[in-house]
Amino acid sequence: MSQQSSGWMPTTPKASPPAVRLTHLSFGELELVLQRQYDDVILIDDADNFDGTNDYPTLTELESIILNRYPDRSVTCVGSIICVTHK
Image: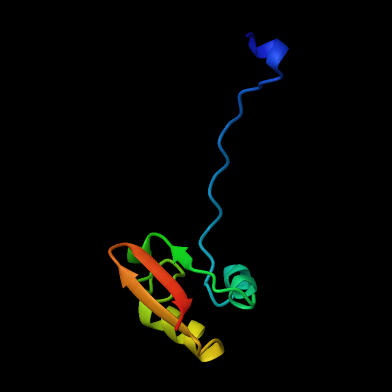
């Protein structure tokens, strides 16, 4: 199948947006999931990025943010994955 007949067009990858503190914009997404009435399991990869640099909170700060707002949750970190579950 040719590129023309399939409608496929090559694209240039977009640059990743800069990291945003989780307490601002991206926490909104996490907050929406945490507010659900289901027993969601939330997995956040690249836990090693949560070291307090590059606008990431530390793992301790992340855990505090979540548990202060949602004390019925549990936050654990295994390897490079942060796991948020109901207690």
